[in-house]
Length: 378
Image 1 (cartoon, one colour):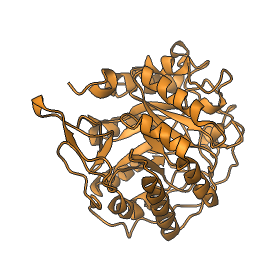
Image 2: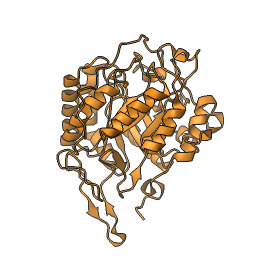
Image 3: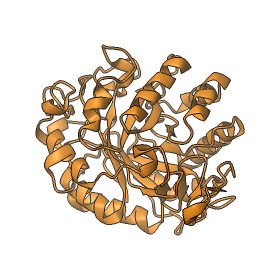
Image 4: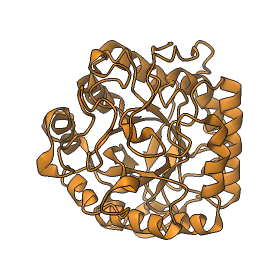
């Protein structure tokens, strides 16, 4: 179903130059999902439902661990529409985004990861840039894992710029960056790029991401790859229409929608999630807040419905954003910052509801997999 979409993502830091203001505008509707293929296939190599899933690239074959019948893989894997850890435990992502790359204290993520962990979150999406060193990336990932948070690293350089997708892949396929990914492959997810592209037709989007996935797999990257929708992350119609073809190309992917829709009603949220589940898409919600970016508070987002339906339908999500780096967008009309100062004690308003007080909040629904909590399968 076509949606009315905002022109930019939330949290002004979706400007690759820093957390400044986004361009605004209605941006027009997404391409229709009427031609969506039903019943996504599991792809070449097929993700198996039992222990030891095989990815579309065949890179994470299962290895038996012995007693107890636990089957262990080299890392996270996507099976059908669900993410599983290396021990075969299903994981529903519950966490937040943090603009780590722009933290005034440096890019190591501390003490912010410690504060985020107090919510009980099981994941953090780490904003990163191609200009940053692999050594610093290693430190940020290590620090997230030390707080029992699944790191999802995303590159922000190509936000809204489809032509820059190959430059992101150039970074991910550098031998020194691949080395960092391999070091943490048991516990890491890679989000190829944040909101790459505005108006991108289905054929170009499919071809571009198939090429990106293939390049990364050939470079030795075996971890699950998160792929944002176009239209500044908002085009769920395109995910529904083309997503099955990407899953057929490589089963070890997650499709991410950023819900900055000008129609953020509960009815729309429910319909789009149910349509995606009916297609068996490995969908996650990569960003959302209390309202849209375009015209801010004039377009409220029914996040409580998202939280409730995500429990019912078993869909992962991450809120935007923690707030140690202040958002530029909507700062005078409903800031997107979940906290006043980047601390757990500073949670306020919608951020406190999403993280703690709502019955479907992070604190009430997040489960950290045993492999992240203890480092072992049993």
